[in-house]
Amino acid sequence: MFVQFNEMRVCFVIACHNRRQKTLNCIASIVQQVRDTSIEVSVILLDDGSTDGTADAVLEQFPAIRVIRGSGSLYWNGAMRQALSLAMEGDFDYYVLLNDDTHLYPNALGVLISTHERLSKADRALLIIVGSTQDQKSGQLTYGGWRQVSQWNPLKMVKVMPQSEAVLCDTVNGNCVLLSRGVVKLAKNLDGSFTHSMGDMDYGFRARKLGCKIWVAPGFVGTCDLNAGKGMWTDVRSPVQERWKRMMGPKGLPPKEWLVFTYRHGGLLWPLLWINPYVKFWIKGLLRF
Image (cartoon, rainbow, N blue to C red; front, side, top):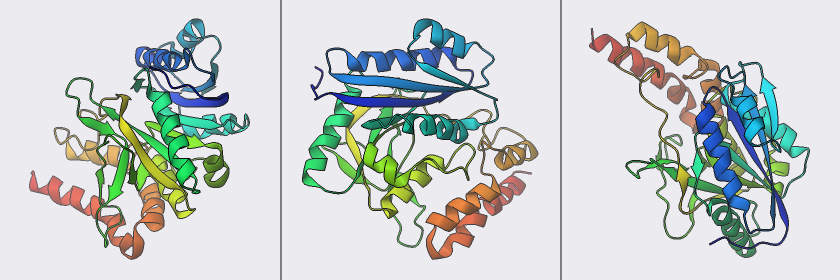
């Protein structure tokens, strides 16, 4: 059943790179959200240099979508930042940050907006609503909200399991996040200090410091498998030198970007938190020889 709303405008912001079918499936799941509703939905897709025909396939199947073609060097945060900047020009009621490998359930947008509408009536704070995703086979939680669990290490966090009612959290994965107009005007865009990862969690932390509250919406809003394993810097099956190169790269844990993140959000012990993963990497790597 779809939730009925007064007329409102929502913009989905998506970045993609060489995942044509997943991107098409994602957009198809967005189309399902607006049947029998008064919500006007727009989609801005930044195709960051795909070579598999993603942009053309999207325009062929969904000609109303605004597709921006990137150079291939933007990565997730850079692409999402550029796409959100364009979306902000439209002054929408809501913005949804969405990964292109996320497949939304038919009532996902209704759940996100109704959660925001209900909670905002009882709280004057600006609210961010996080949608939790699950593995399509196991049903396990994959992405969503995060809660801090250590007073001494603010970056020690656990994923927040969605409940039957909304629950508070401290920051977000950017796989499915609803931002109101007020939040975007206050916290503005994703930070250009980051290339690929960390930008979403940084946004959540910065928004909270500005007075926003972050809620995990009830239940799961869709599926999105974990992006981990082969080819990642954490893949212990790869040679240690190769893993180190990946760790230093844009999709790993670039020292300058990790420095910004830990300095901002790591508390008084941020220098130790900054160096910790690099020291651990080499200790574990040398022990395997």
